[in-house]
Image 1 (cartoon, helix red, strand yellow):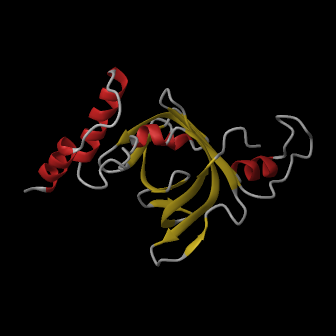
Image 2: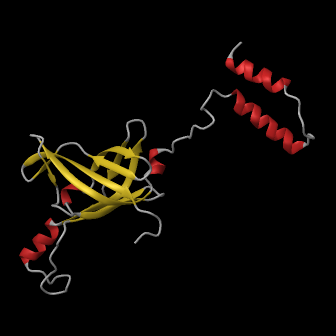
Image 3: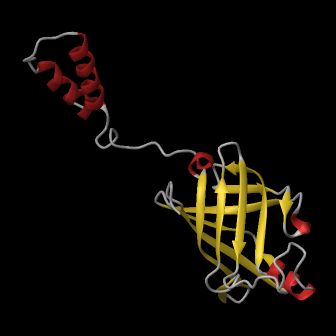
Amino acid sequence: MSLIANRFQILLSAKPTFRRDRRTSVSGLACVALALLPTGHAQAQVKPLLSDWLVGTWMLESFTSTDEHGVVSDAMGAGATGYLSYSKDGWMSVQLAQAGRHPFAVPDMDGGTPEQTIEAARTFFAYSGPFSVDEVNHIVYHHLLYSLMPNWVGSKQKRYVKTEGDDVLELSGDPILIAGKTQVTRLRWRRRAPNAQ
């Protein structure tokens, strides 16, 4: 006799010790259904779609690049900060900043010297636009409508997704040219808790 048939036979032979009404009948049927499932199946949880799981705000933990010789370095220097956001309506935005950025000499939008303006651009990176997800291959695509780097406007940035639990996200891309070297970047993010500062 199979395991399922054996469980069903035991349930049928058990004598009820309570008065049956509509509520207890439904509960009994639920118990029968659970008993017929393979062991452990009742506890299994359905994983959400990656497109749903990504939704929220993520705070940067590390941003590294690995060159063709396997040398790993901090892509924006030690202590870089930033956030990544995915919204329910299919929009994403990312902002990254190098630690210790210097203010302009004059607190005006156009108050920086040419050197200060160049430094400000080189120590910050941002882009935004719609996103789409390849659920099978665990890839998220960022379709850029805006970017600090003009060359990326209109591009589709491919990011390979790795997850750890429910609150850690790692994104990596295909090799790109950074400072004259072909490198692979990896950004590790932690989900921002609701109402966190």
